[in-house]
Length: 314
Ligand SMILES: [Fe+2]
Image 1 (cartoon, rainbow, N blue to C red):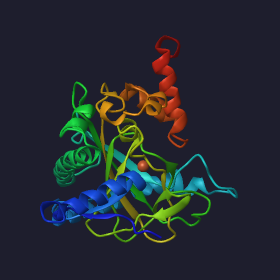
Image 2 (spheres, rainbow, N blue to C red):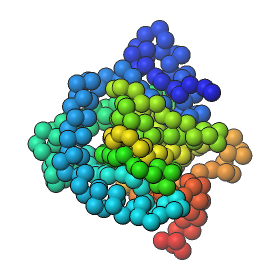
Image 3 (cartoon, rainbow, N blue to C red):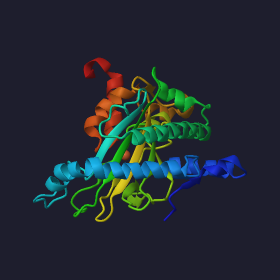
């Protein structure tokens, strides 16, 4: 089997830049996922994020998870559960306006550290978007601009824990889905695995690696690149041992950003016929909310139908 793509970002500054850009392009075209090392986010900041996230789960979330999920989900169940996930989560919004000061139960240090971490991730996301532009032959800043809308991107973080599960065969940590948005930056547990992606009809582990950031592409990048890059199905398998930490940050288009394939990537006549739709990001998210765990293609079709007949479907 081919190796999961790992990008050493330091190599972008030296002689190996071209080869590294090619690995990124191959990962975007064939995996929808890659893992970054030497990405510039300080390791001690990541260690602090991890420590505070794990402390916060123990102090504020574990009991709630036990009462709401662990004690009910598997009660008398024999077939696989398809309407629930074995996860404990909360969400932080950073852009366009931060809600960190309003999220309950976070101590001051945790709020401050998550703000700083988010700022670093935002910079990294924008740097990556420009690397993608370069590989795609789009002008620098094209993707950032495409995501901008009137208020800038939506940027938020889903902080998740996947506690040990007695019956991982009956419930997923997180059911298979593609991500709706743009670029996803994941700080995952370096010991407890569980994240898998679907490649050539096989589920492949995304390997835990200390201080790495896992990147994956969402549906919007598939649309903008006219399918040259694809969002890929992924899932989390619950584990019998260990509590998996997963901090996923979503660099998404602004709510009123209009998303459509970049003209430079729609050149051939046959591509024009099978083109991806044009829509406002918020409309896509409204549709996604109810269809997250279903295939993405019907979502693209629904957006096309809305584009063709905006009044009937409004
Ligand atoms: Fe996801």
